[in-house]
Length: 101
Image (cartoon, rainbow, N blue to C red; front, side, top):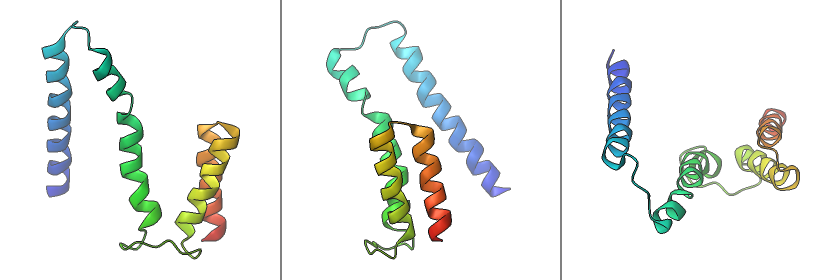
């Protein structure tokens, strides 16, 4: 029950923060500097989620070739770089992790 209440609390806080930004800004135009800075939010959030899972799968930094998460992440990064396909890079990383694990 505590877990669900925590999740609902996080949803309420996240929703209220987003709604307040929309309500305060309304139709106001953002400056070019703010728009430019906002372009980096999704990649930064993704990196904050992915990097700990790839570089610290056991809770401590592991850069060895035995780190299957790191190897699978490298495979996915190469596929993303060459193929420019999000779905293909996710699938290749998952397959690499499955094969290596």
